[in-house]
Length: 252
Image (cartoon, rainbow, N blue to C red; front, side):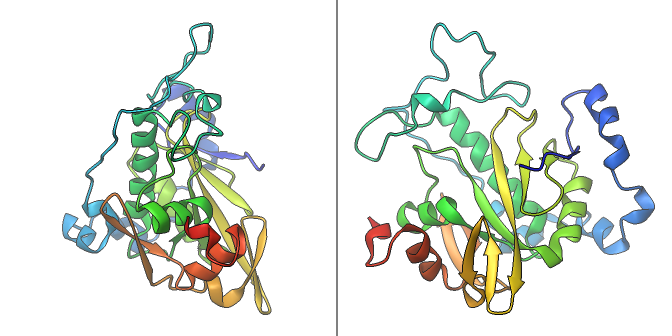
């Protein structure tokens, strides 16, 4: 994985200084970019982040760590995320599920991406995040992955938006194939941005080839996650059938 760090965090002043050389100078951020963050809250009426409600039933939730785990685990931006092994391999009917505070952190990452890109950069839910939205209108309770897709031609503007955001998140992996948005430290929960590149009739994204029509901009499909209306590929069903099985199996 590419891990050239571009800091957008407030974890510590030292971390800020360490990655300052990768921060674009103010004059490099054009007028459109500066205006993007001065728009009033009304812009979000068309964005999923306008609805920030969060629901998580505590039943069957995994503990953050085992008693003999010496790692400083928790849900703050300065702690290692909870132990994935305590819920991985579970399912809708058996096993423990991701902790509610971890799930809230994942939702915060998704809200951040939507708030940053909505109306500015075409983006869409991808992979298991798209699957969960279509099947459950929620995040996957037994997985910690979040995935979105953006075309590589929009990468520089998208990166500039992320880097100029006043929010306390960290970005790693500046270039294709993936950029990772962390809650804080690199050991916290994260969201992966897959940069899509089109060659002739095919598009490469998330280490898979797709027919280019399946991931074409402007991503005017719509999905719902916890009451948030978020962009999906227009041909999201084709994407899901390709990734998770044809014949409707992925719907179960």
